[in-house]
Image (cartoon, rainbow, N blue to C red; front, top):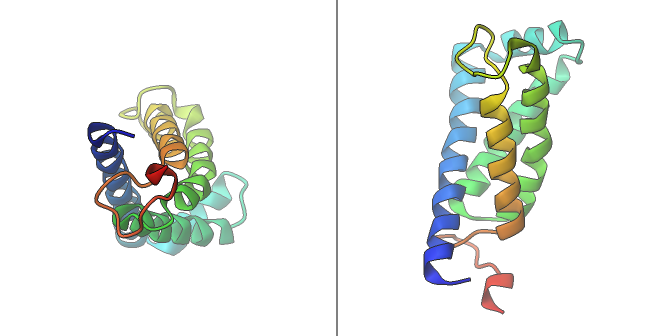
Length: 134
């Protein structure tokens, strides 16, 4: 991968890391609270404990993406989370600004996260990508 591409991958990886951290630590922990998030999951027919697993995946995965440590694996673990959010918001229509949040934004997160799963860390990572060295 050339320098421009590795920097572009890094920009996407770091941005996604910040988004996942904010979505877990701020939105789920501070705004909605973990019990409130669990209640929302239950209202969708999901088990409440899945909210805690989602919170952990987003927080840990977001930190891994931000730092560039095992980014491919973190992204791979986060794709189902983003697809689950797409499903959870599918009833609210396309536009995420709709009441209940539409599915456009979570779908974009799923696709962008899949790109990191395919491309790896890029530049500015604590862990060097072996595939990028070849």
